Image (tube, helix red, strand yellow):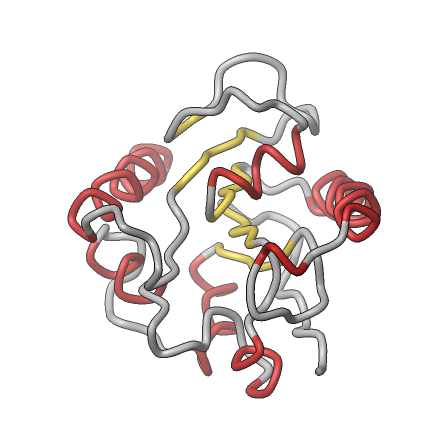
Length: 171
């Protein structure tokens, strides 16, 4: 399966970081393309986007100041299929991307993504306290947008709304 290209640039407000692409995303070449994934609905309902975008429009969000990448580029059915070696390599590659592009905020789409990257097992939702992995890049942990997540969608949207409100204040 194909890797999905990152959507990164200098001067971004937020880079959304997932575990890795799903097989459907790999086939279609777009982030969060599985129709059972709630990512695009969450962004819209939380106020992060002015309208409901489709996965095929993921590159358009650069215009809003949002980018996309993953800790592991290889598409898999689930995060449990990612090897320890892939995570180790992915941590280094992701750190390099964040150091190069320096977004204001790194939003980890899933607590597990953040704990794999930061090696910090104690993470709560929202902005993380303490020293960030990449100096000057604020870290925000949001629930996974997968349709398999058992947390109510309204609760997930509420956590993303905290990110949206922070961005609105900085504009």
